[in-house]
Length: 106
Image (cartoon, rainbow, N blue to C red):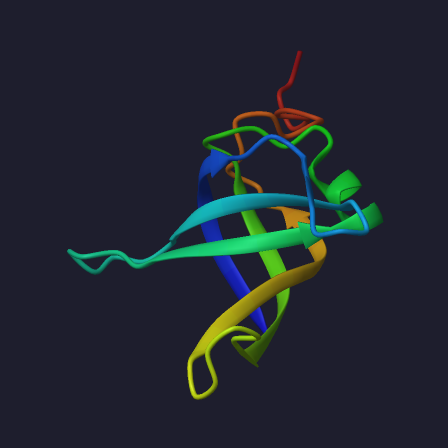
């Protein structure tokens, strides 16, 4: 599954759980012409946090994501969604895109 959006927030890296799993969260605002745009929080785990190197707030990206549902370990019958990213592509309209405007005559 993929989701294209503008990065609105990038959390600092944090260690979670007893094993010290490294996690980083990004919030994306969908790219659409609708009046009310959706937002999506996407998690990056372990070495996938390196995909965020060079990415800044305001960049347009396409996140390739996996969605899962998990049951709470402390409360049976209570579920929550987990959205994690395994690939990230920077869009053309990103403020930090490399290359610039190569078709200029000078």
